[in-house]
Every structure is written in C-alpha cells, then in structure tokens.
Image (cartoon, rainbow, N blue to C red; front, side):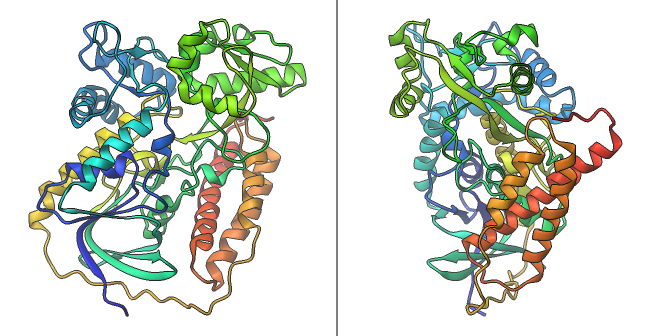
Length: 497
C-alpha cells in the first residue's frame, strides 16, 4: 500500500459549489479540492442566464421568490430548505460581489436585473450571458490564493470509501493511483448530463459523486426528476448542445413551430415565459400536432445592437454555426439540462452518512421540487455549500483520531473495459426517458441497463477514466429508470409518447 496524503477536508469538484465551500471553510482547516479535468471545465462555467435572488431591491421580496419557485416546482419543494434559499440569497450575492463578481449595471449604476421564465419579478443578476463563468473565475482566483487550500486538476476519483475516522479517496493522476484521506468529504461533482445522448452539460457530468454516495449507502432521492431545457441549439450534430439562455425569452424572444408560427398561446397563458418543463412539454405536443420536430427561437425583431451587447457569447457561437440571431430564427429543441434530485441532504448539506456532505447539482436539497426555476441553480450552489462549510467548521476541532487509508487494490494488468456501453446507455435513455417517457422503452431499457451495470461491477477491468465514467453512467441510468419504472407502475396516467 502506497503512503497516502492526509487532509481535514477533501472536496470532490471544482465548480461553484466546491470552490465556495472551500472559501467558507476556516483558514486553519487543511483542504484539498479535486478537479476531474481542467479547473474551468464544469457545468457552473456554462451557466448563462444568471443568479436569481432578492438583493437590495425594494420592489421584490423573498416571499415572491419563494412563490415562483414553488409554482415552478409543482409545490413538491422542501419548504424549510426553500426558505433558507430565498432568505439567504442576499448574503451570498453580496459576498460574491465583494469578491469581485462583475454583474451588469444600468446607466444609473443600479444592478441590471433581468426576467426569466417562471419569475414574476426582474430578479436575475447577470454578467452579460456568461454569468456562471464570471462567478467561477472569481471564486477560482480567490481560492487559489488561500494558503490552506490545495487544488489538483486532471485527477479522476476512482473510488471513495468510509474509514473509521473519515474517508479514503483513490485518485487516478497521470496513469497512477494516488490515495488521499480526510476527516470530512464534500461531493460537489455536478450532474448526470452525459447519461443522455444530447445534453447541455460539460464532459465531467457523468454522475460520479452520486454513484460514490450510492455505493456508500447514502440515500439517492428523486433521480428521475430531470429537467429538459426547451431551447438548446439544435444542429443535430454534437452531443454537447449549446444552450440558448432562458434570458433570451426573458428579453422578448418568440418560440416558433415548423411553420414559423408562435404556438405557446395554445398551451399556457404565460406563453414563452412559462417554466421550462411546461415549455418543453408544449414543444413535444406541438411536434406531435404538426408532425415535425423543427422549432425555432426568434428575437430578431429587437434592436441588433441590444442583442449583441446583451448576449455576446450566444451571438458569437450562433454566428460560428451559421446563424445570425439579429436577423433570423434559430433552430432549437429540448435537451437534457439539469438534475433536481440527487444525493439526499439536510439543510446543512450533510448526507445520511456522518461527515459526508453534498452540494450543488449532485445533491438533493429539495429546493427545486420537480422542476427547477430558472437561475436558482447557482444560488443553491452558493447557499448550501456555505452551510456545508459552516457545519464542518463547527465540528472540526472535535474530530480527532488518526486517519487510516482504505486498502485499495489496483490490478494494472487487468483488461480494458469493452467499448460501447456508454453509447448504448445514452441511446436507451434518449428513447426511454426524454421529456415525456416512453413506457415500453422504459421497461425494456431498465432491464438492459441493469444488465450492463452488473456486468461492469462483477468483472475485473482496469480502473481508468473510461471505466469509472461508464460505471457511473450505468449506475445513474439504473437508478433513474428504476424510479421511473416504479412511478409508471403506480400511475395509470403516466405520460406516454
């Protein structure tokens, strides 16, 4: 057994949740942040629209924000966690502004707050259309300067085990397995987008943290609560779909069917500003009615300079793909975007396993209910990662005992995993559980995914990035389809394609 490196806290994930947790930990706590790929490759960096919250706005209040979140979430939200989210938004928005996050302002110097689907008030703070990257970059600069925090990148966590006094991590670095121990562990590993054939998520989103927690015995809650964003750019070519932000509709864009006609008036009185799940379902109904899956978003009636200044990143990326959003409609279609469920946590962000925390998209705080309100994700990542850090700070001095390393074994001569499992699972998920589930494919897909999962678990393959991600994708797909299968069995009205 190789010697291991010991830390007080190990954070898995280098997005907004992981970095903000590190920032809020006491400076006398030794912290390691593990980034699976390069430090800026994460779902946080892709967040375009902004961060929702009531901050220095006399025309808005947390109860209104709470109401909009409850409506969007089908009133399945956990109210105690939601109260924390909306009432503490001002704390964390204020803090990241202090750290240097540059939110856009109006000519009179006030913050420019935009409107997005499901919100009844203008409460979205943004930095052009790259808000997530702005917040992530600011936090990364801040945390990198902290003397008590180490960050390692391009490091794949292969396994996580509970030990007598903490946790042991098996981490693949430069084709070598390195071991780390800690008293506390924070999972901030993002979502499960790569379980699907088409997603807006980054390459790291393979559900690793959820899989580790599941294998440790933590409860996974509502993993079938998956949000499909209605306006992903539809070029029908690449797996990682470019997102056309909710904010584009917030600024007045229309949704058009294959005949270039508006259609939302036939499905919801909120029109284009209905919550995401409503708009995605409406698109699917309209596709069935028209017999076409050609849909468009059109903001070309607005001033071209306004569009370019408000959405410079979206404008630039669409132009590269051959579309000028200032002059023409742009093709869109729903795409996997976000996970409302995940590792069950309490309001301290702690799982049912002592001293194991989860925050950000991999966690299930319950604030989103069955559908996330636009721009609440960055807020949740900040608020509840701060709660995780606060709880760890309160316990750190009392935690004692020598850290021991779990006896991991690695067979460097084991065969590589066969190719094709991830591709097959993604195809199954796209057919079985996309926007409006297909019952026949759901049950058939569950059986095959279970078979793949058991094959990967019961055979000896070399543990590398491919194997870790394939096993995570198989595990998450299995949990999703198993949950959806049980819901379908109990509900005669479960939607069919």
